[in-house]
Amino acid sequence: MIEGGSHVAIGHGKVILLGEHAVVYGRPALAAAIGLGARATAERADHDVLTIAPWNVRVEPSVDPGAPELARAFAAVLAQYPEGRPTLSVAVDVELPGGAGLGCSAAIGVSVIGAIDDTLGVAREPRARADASLAWERVFHGNPSGIDGTMAACGGIAVFQRGQPLERVAPREPLRLIVGYGGEASSTRAMVESVARQRDRAPERVDQVLDGIAALVRNGRLAIEAGDHAALGKLFDLCQALLSSLMLSTTKLEEMCDAARRAGAFGAKLTGAGGGGCMIALVGDASAAPVREALAPLAAQIFDVEAGAP
Ligand code: MEV
Image (cartoon, rainbow, N blue to C red; front, side, top):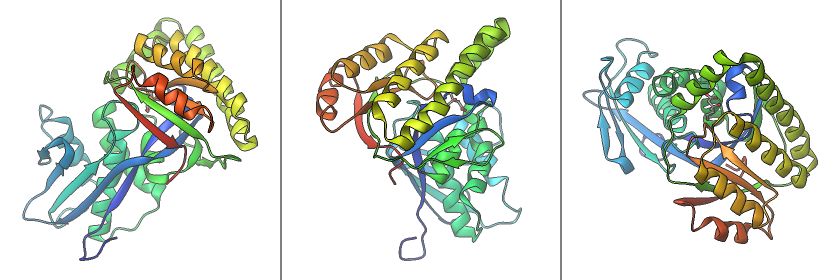
């Protein structure tokens, strides 16, 4: 909370360390909040309005199916508050690229809900705030697992599984990641639908891949708790191969992963929905700079993050 009676609420960006897509089908996934995210403030106003400063976007809530997604998502959030509440102006500042797999929309949604909660005096736990953000996320992504909103609200490193309590994971050693954004935006909805279509056609094959990813998640948790980054890096590489077999990778993502590995990363993989967006490389102190350099000619943006850091 900042002075002057206005309230700042935060939604964290996230990376999925292991388990994207499998998590949509009830398998566990390992995810970490990152230090980039969204910040929102709300104040009473003569009508409801949402502004996203860096994008120069200003919308009023709308339930019209033809309205912009942001207007419909804002309406879906507001519909969860009692009728007759004061009308609000909500302003968001966001540091994440959109459509890049870093949980940008969930971070915005959670920060918006947090700002409204604070302004209206609604107190709820982070996980309840994450649940409230599902209505927002559904407008953008169709059938989200809820992992993005949960990490946006709860932070840290955790194993997420649909319908289960969030399991916190305590890393023995800090996990340093170089995140490379290839500059190709991707649609989570389209990638989730593509996996669903492949699963309709070949359920056994796709379920085997999803089970394989779930096994990597279980081992990944142990590797993080043991501080075994060499093992975790190998799990990243295996996960990347499984995600590629579901046609979720791109030439750009493969090039960035290869370059990071050659420059000394423990391992590298796409993160989030794939089909564009970001890759993550697990690095140590010695490999961080070479990996950044190797990614520089390939990536549109590079972020150096500590997994789970506030
Ligand atoms: C998106 O960050 C992760 C996906 O698994 C979709 C979801 O879990 O909602 C691709």
